[in-house]
Length: 593
Image (cartoon, rainbow, N blue to C red; front, side):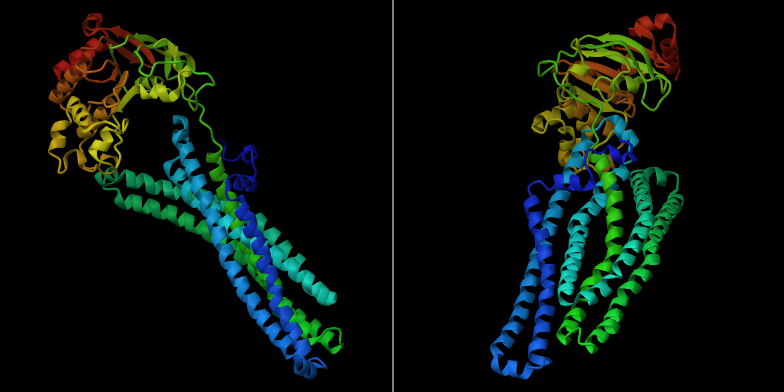
């Protein structure tokens, strides 16, 4: 989804938040009402104070009232204390409610985002950087939580407090009330001007943060490359520049409010001055009692403080607006490669026949086709080897079988059925994939091998490790199969990682086994042993092998030579040698080497 296309979201930001409050909406309504109630209760202390002052302290009959009605005096005192304690209790539980709802929404949305990210196509992962995605599910999502837990509460507090106090002031002395509230339009005008300037700043700030996180993630993940080229100082300088850029943007965003804050603060500070001058004149002219003056004085903060808070509230709301767009972009994204409404009825285990019929393919962001009119058939149980120069389209071709990408022309069929008509989960569960670029999880060796089948027995794990020639080096590890593999397999050699990856692919007993240069980092003796085991598997599977070594491909039932996205040669080892083409030259080259 286009980052700028906010209007494409099916729901507004606040509607989206409300949707994700499912199960907590009633509680949220209750705590909002609680916010209104405890802010209206702010009036109780000034109200009782004004009555005590007028009836028992400064009024013309104050001494007589105290002598005749002391119980009324103490009742007002106890009610002041009682309402204050009650208000504190409501505030406490109200804050707990806001936190409970915000954490529930945070939990729900984060799970949905992770689910969305997991189910996306390869196109999605080539579009979004890892650091950017991490920022969206952490910092951006926390801004959403802050909106629910703090911003909404502050807005409700400001509205309810100003409304309640304004009405109370009107009833007490409407002239004094109008004099005080006359400041509000000027403050609102300043806040609107502030909003216009700070909104783009927050959007830029989110981009800078995502960029900085991406740089950190890439360099931590690629620490070996950094050290190998002694580029620590260079990367530190680069990060320092990125961090400085983020800091400066952050400062500019903060300074934007600081430029407006003195005006808001000055106008808010005018309120006590207005009360002193106008209220003093009203007292002198007997247009206001001392109790009313004390009530105005005791509640003037209830107008001044929300006015001061409006800037912070607007600042946090703009932070939420910028962050929520990033979150909603992932939230509402949908993969392009999905199951059809009606999928073909397939057996749990496929026979493994693979057929490419005039298949062409190009990436969505590419102009030239990667594959052009590819056609071949692999019968169940056969081994098809694919060879060719780097960049000729070998890996792109095998990615079409599990539907990582869709062909732009032609069809890919498994057991005579177009892969687009097969349920994705069922298709991929019948495919074992091992690539040259191995990803191992921070888990035990046993856990990595059994990744595709969590119910795999220890005996089977050992068996598949033996098939991939991994059992010998695993036995020498400190804790054997229970040895924890570091992040991405740190601590293992390239060949060891490839053999664990191969064992993982075999462990699902696939109908189709795809090996993309899986043995490129192992020695020839180990590779020969692996090839022998692959021919003697205790289950039937069709093998698609991408390799550069003749020793890996020479026993294949069919060898395909690819050049510039096309199949230029095909046949067995002997047939291709007789043709005297690319394969024959490769045989001579490797034999000479």
